[in-house]
Image (cartoon, rainbow, N blue to C red):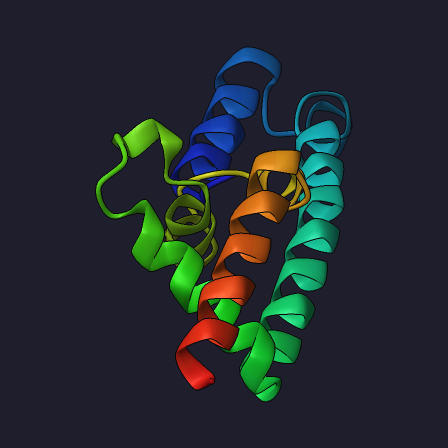
Length: 121
């Protein structure tokens, strides 16, 4: 959830339920729990990204997967979407994590790995 949506949710809680502690527990606490859960996915994604940055083979594979997406329609650019979403917060981390482990994403990484090996030889 973006910060803007979170603030909007807080304002809705105030308008609809009031400003008491109980009102926030009823209307806003579930939203906070959702953000907390989504942030777990975010931490996992950033750990994976850190691993990728430290591993030249993974980095080349990821980079090649992104390059191979350039000519695809925007909705098919999985790796670009994941990277953009991680750094902008435009999408929930949970959705980005699911996209990153999808068969299409794994296939793109494998094709990127093949291209990386081909270039090195």
